[in-house]
Length: 627
Image 1: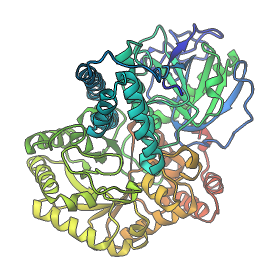
Image 2: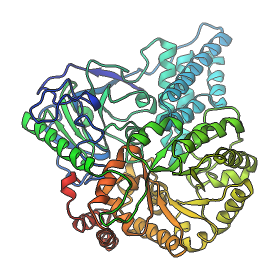
Image 3: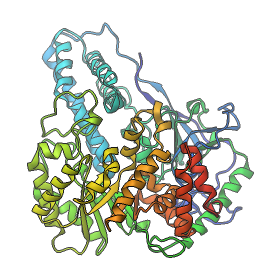
């Protein structure tokens, strides 16, 4: 067995690049020269295509990946990127099965412990520098590295004479098998565990650390079988023009981090790692198409399309609204104060999902009330008189907290104690967070709303609303992520002041398709009519009660689906900041009546593909935006 990949690549060949990433573009005409490959943004903050536009619908049979042709995968992050392929290839070899240490077991154990701690500290440091989603993901990975059970297993092997590198490999292998057998979220942590193992072995053996270069002569298209969070956390548009991976789905770590970075990405792209290093690649993060060695005419056409769509998106400015003036507030999903500049840059009217986990993960004790208050107030003050919706701590499953005893062994943690269920087990943690939120809100003009994740029953909704009122918070909502909550939304809305629909979890639970498992990524589609029906039930119940119902899951970032959601009665949309211009432009081109017609057409379909096609047919003018 071998382990992790290390980078290999070559110099760029092929047609001269047309434009650089971000503000490196030097002109706007099709014939202008530019400084190097990168995201084809035309110097603005919008890309070639939009999120959710026909992802996978134009699939073609892959041609030879070493020459001109194309591959198709799942589009997960909007825009287009162009540059030489940098293919992650090669692997750190498995340590010799017979390797033994020199007899000083204590010294060898200490060496292994130092290596693991070095890796954990590096993951923490990368997360701290990256912030946001990356900090959450890498913090959880650092906790995994420091797991005392793993350390005990490594120490036991060393005491039997096994050299540290082999002891790490065998110990991690044992837990790898346990995680894989558990299925669900735990099975998806295998990739993270492999990454920690490989980095630790690299430290112990002096091999180069796995990963991708932090700098390069020119932006490249990063191609890999899959990417560990640490591989992408510190990359930027200045280094990587686009991501292409053979594995992963719309809610994989690669997809989430790519969207947070605003870098185009295509995942689930079969045959991608066979692309020859250095091959010029044009990646369309809206359609899922990956063009190999595209001709000058094709790249020039992409450049012209970028400029046309940039102009169309720029024309849609101001608060979100349909063409006939129906207001639809467009909000940003953030992980903390570090994400505020991007949200403001892209015109967010507020925050629709403030994930507070980043304050709690990767630490031995809960954050103090003052620390929490400071982080919350920074966000509230960034949106004076604007809406800020805070999700209370969503821990459990794949986001354990080191300072809380783990729940009893759960065969399927995704269905176990997470979200509000963990809050009820540890009410002191909830009381401290709600108190800090109330204190942070005092003296600010932001409209602070607090919501609980993983609410399944009316009794849970009532319990949370009462806890918020006790803490001095006057707007308490719940997330609709569990099908039971949608089905009985009319009961839950009596206790809640608002709903916010988390389409990622709602889809995985409705279709029994773990959102972290690539093999069922095809089912993880919010366009499925069953999911649309659940959303419509929740929105209808909120409307009848005179209360708001937003969507903060990834579905809100799809401009076409956003119109359908509004047509079903959704009152606000929250998404990753780079998607805001696309959704704003799509809504501005369609009336509320057209959105309602599209929603009815989509819900009348029997499959996700047919639902999307029906909605598109009811929404004229999508082609002008490249949708």
